[in-house]
Length: 422
Image (cartoon, rainbow, N blue to C red; front, side, top):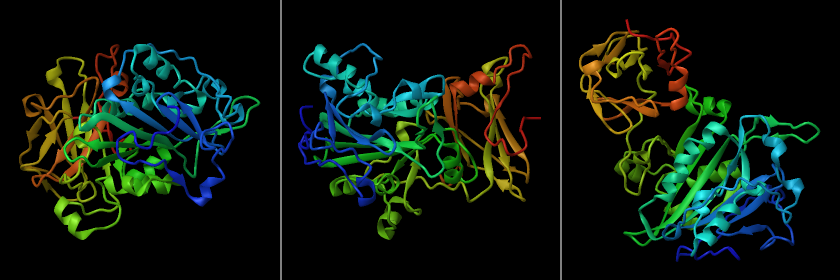
């Protein structure tokens, strides 16, 4: 990338700017292109002096030129930026924080030849391109989003531009190596994915936030605290959290709505603004014109309370417990419980006040609970989403008790009574 190519997608895509309050935080230097861009093969970085981290990265991807590469892991200081504005190995030593690529290695690994792609991949290993990212997030939810981008099949000319960066909060965690100034851990990360839709020929955008701060998540989710939560969001929400200002075309091309729009809300089944769609699989991502699933989590106190994902005996002994915390019985006839792949079981009858319904054996089929991680969703008879829970392979592994010959369920509501079937 000898310079930022604003016409890479064959439609104009200017670089983001910053609010006046954020401008002073951005590194300006005569060593950098346009005074602020550190240019690398296929991507560029704008550095935030306040946090010693990328304010954002911009990565151009050409899916038609991906090449196999070898991971180098040779992290370096970029002298053009200066060591004082980068977090080196000391900040990642013996703690749960990975050097999380903002412009990721695999997506940058493209070029006319294998050598070009290998150089591009190696050049992602600069501390200027990294943030303090929890190992579990880096290797799971964040990786899944990067893989989705690489395989995106809606794209004209196989070209994608991705803006990525950290989000910092008001009550941060810090990392303080011996004798070094403290570094603030991001509460989350954003990705804004831009491409030209192959069918319409128009600019299209998908925007995401992934949080890694439990305190922030507790505020966001209300009733529940998740370890990591991935949302599809509006451009405006990212702008408000970061002080970055994207081009108006990017704002207009995003399918989610920030401001209340009655006509569009009615047509698309949107009743809460700004929109924030929680994502567990690519099927959850909203495309232009998609009708939204109404999220009724707060309408009724019925939850997916627990699941035995890895029984000590046969896989037929898997179960899912649904709990009714309402002070009255709730009719669940016609409700559906689904897995990540969309397999569904239909419920009957009702659940008494304070009671549970346990689905197991043939009563759970064809819903599957894979040991590698999964998603369980509960819908009412109208198709409204009542609850959704996800679990990871690590949680399944932690539930195994071989010495006791009794594996434990995964409880999704730990502040409630721990639930097991009778």
